[in-house]
Length: 370
Image (cartoon, rainbow, N blue to C red; front, side):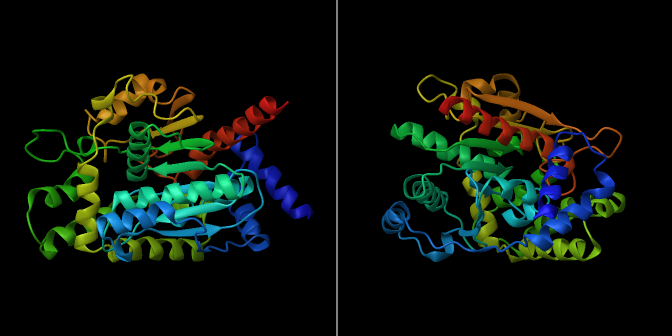
């Protein structure tokens, strides 16, 4: 398997900033896809205790459950991916896949389009981690992006309040959005960010939503995605023309598939989450003792408000929440600034941080076992 070994070496050098990767990036990733093509399938859970209990307690049907997909691969560290409001996980980490899959299997938690229950998704997460940890002996890393990071913080906080310990190996939070105040300043006359304008109608209106705010929010999410997609020079270095078309189609399909019920349920879920500074106390902190990496983009202003509580606490006191944590800003010297959660169009800027995180995690575990 010399080609795969070369591919792996090139990726590692790229992640460490030691190779002129841009001209080679498309070649080695597409070569990796040829020799190890993605085989993403629906995961059939072997543990359903927690989710069955939540379904019974809340009378929830299948519409409220996330779809869990898996791409299986040998490796010691499985990764669970939770995306933002959009896109789905497989598109969110599309250009990080080759590095992540080398660590172990990838599990994608895709949110339902027509409903949303945080309680049920938390239970699905509990069951999946129990399955991986108890049945396979492999505690996972969780990689959560934007709104997905908010879900993870709420999940960890609830576990702390129950007095339970969550067996995870590590945590990566990308551009965390953990409460509605991150997107909409309290008392502001109107939203100050692009994403704030997309979600404001779901908070102001009662009952059913008309098509107007639904279509407007879809247009805003599409605009945010296509702002990166229009960067032709960057795309030529990242994707083949066929991949560009397939990726854009997939993301647009996801945006269009979210119904007004599903969109409102997601926003209301975020609205119910406490800002992290509201539970800054020894009674709840730290949330998690596992190694944690927090990544912010250099330009978060299209999404996060200037007074975003999450940004403030993680920039100033992240070790109170995660004792073994680091918080970094992802930049793109000499190019367009890195935008909020831009894992697709600025994957090369995020990859070195994520690659080093997994490498240090493995080294730490090797040192501990020795």
